[in-house]
Amino acid sequence: MSANPLGNPLLTGLTEDQAAQPCTLVIFGGGGDLSRRKLLPAMYNQALDGALPANFALLGVALEEMDDDAYRAFAREGVERFSRQALDERHWQDFGRLLHYQPGSFTDPQTYARLKERLETIEPEFGIPGNRIFYLAIPPALIETCVENLNAVGLVYPVGNDGPFSRIIVEKPIGHDLASARGVNDVLGRNLDESQIYRIDHYLGKETVQNILVMRFGNSIFEPLWNAKYIDHVQITVAEEEGVGTRAGYYDHAGALRDMVQNHILQLLTLIAMEPPWAMRADIIRDHRQEVLNCLRPITPDVIDEHVVRAQYGPGFHQGADVPGYRREEGVAPDSTTETYVALKVYIDTWRWAGVPFYIRTGKRMPKRASEIAVHFKSVPPILFNANPDRQLEQNVLALSIQPNEGLSLRIATKLPGPKVKIFPVKMDFRYGSTFGDQSPEAYERLILDVMAGDATLFMRRDAVERSWVFIEDILQSWASSGTRWLPEYSAGTWGPLESDRMIEAGRHKWRLL
Ligand code: BG6
View 1 (cartoon, helix red, strand yellow):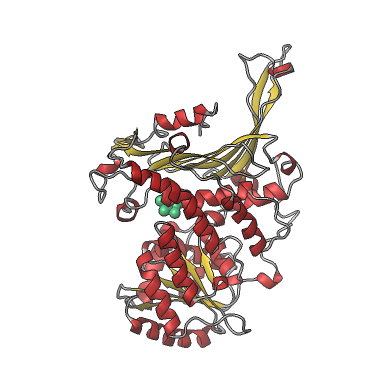
View 2 (view 1 turned 30 degrees about the vertical axis):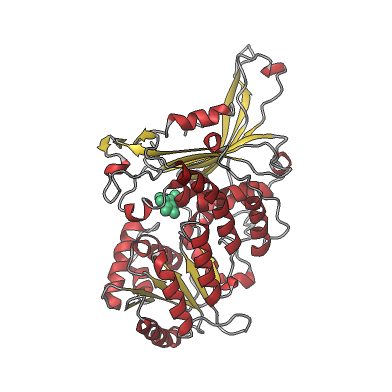
């Protein structure tokens, strides 16, 4: 496929009145890993691309003792190692000037009083009219104290006036279960209006994920087929090569279902399954996504064994080297029953999706990093080319590759050249890399820009977070009541346990080879 990205720039992203506004971005946890790897490089790339508002400043707040210069050096190291675009010395000088730092404990009210003073100095210097975005890149336990203190010192403006805005970005996890998610949302709701809250799910900022809407509703050929009449089943895979790494402290209490399915994967599902929205407006799109969550068929204890498989990685290989099993990883309890892999068969009880299984799988220490959504269309009738039951034609598959190797491919049956009618499945393939050249922006680049523009389309509303937990909690409760002491194991570097193959095969389907 070819495209001329400059020839037909039908971009309907940020509109005139949704341009990024002048503001100060305050990052709580500005000295942490997320800032170093993702947030600061994201801001640098926006600066390089000329996407930042002309009046902009960034202020990191964290416990570490640093001054502005040390923070700039910290940011520079992060950009050098993790930025999408290489560091350019001339641009760096301009960008570095925007960065500031203030040390302080998040539990100390003085930190917030000092922050307010600092903002009041920075804002006139950079011509910023008082707009503030607070990014909470902090452990969930600190959200409450942080938000209440911000409010107490008057850093949260009321909504509904024409004055400057204050917005808050909250990172996952939002809660550990339904009750704790409600607790976090209550704290946020007591201190801010829902329109000021941006719950980030970085999967929604991925270029390929945003393309789901364009593919479905910007083309006429897919939507008429997008239903139970033509679609046989859908597979969503999010496979990671890495193990738990240094995050055992969090992960061992979370597991794959909470870490990946409750948020990222259910959000992918909503985009694939939602009804066509009638306007590209945040509230409309979020309402439509919400309907999918509302219609998820609960996985109750009586069906859990046919619908859910969980497993943990054992010792195995990663890039040719021996790697330990999950329970031997640093910080993991030696008798941990936390799942590092989960596979689910999910139904959406609507007319559109009646009877169509959505298979989901995600795991750590899989053979490779590969995320895709594969839509399998129904087989052609057993007539003509598909008449021989021993030689069934393969189904048409539309595969959206989310990462890496971003793109989209369609498998179709074709006649093999030659005197006989021999049918061969071929792929029509579109790859972002070869068509558009440049690397796509990182999810955080797009999402932070959206917050500056006040566009909440790609963020999680309160009801989405809580409804997802309702679905997940049924499964968690069944697991808790089963009192399992050991999980099925899969060797590190393999595609998960046999139980998962059996689950999908029970529905006469097979996991795709990725
Ligand atoms: C995070 C999870 O939200 O997403 C991690 O907590 C996971 O466990 C990560 O590794 C995956 O994100 P990405 O963008 O690398 O696919």
